[in-house]
Amino acid sequence: MSDQPYHTPQMTPPATVEACRERLATLKDEIVSIRIQIATSDIRRQADRRSLDATWYHRAKTALRLKQAELALVSAQLARLNGRSPVAQRDRFKDALIEVLRSECDEVRWQSALVRARALHESRDEIRG
Image 1 (cartoon, rainbow, N blue to C red):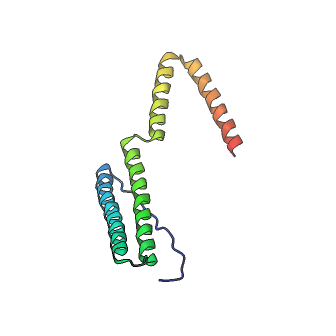
Image 2 (cartoon, rainbow, N blue to C red):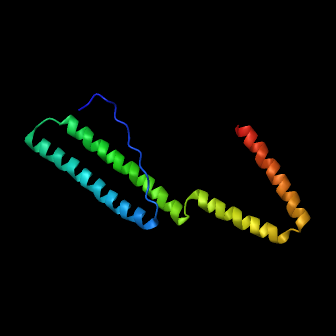
Image 3 (cartoon, rainbow, N blue to C red):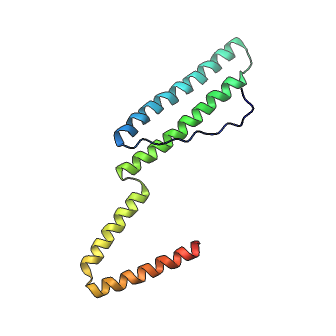
């Protein structure tokens, strides 16, 4: 093993819903496999009254954590692609609200509301800095 610190590799989520689903299925299988290997190794170790192989155990746990992190990333990507993420739901609600308000306002009131909304948005951006 090297003395270099371990850095988590950058994971790029799949770009399509189908690719996300396929990757999720693969990741779930890999996670189950790693868990089974850890459990099997522990049972054998206990039966043989041996000590824990710390290097192997830490590698297995690291692999498990990386797979779980990728699973979370791909799940979030799938939610975004399906439009089920909280941000997508909020954006769809805002679009619907704008459509309703636009249909109920004349042009003068609509322009006035836009000016006030832009001013409010800009003042909040300044506060957040």
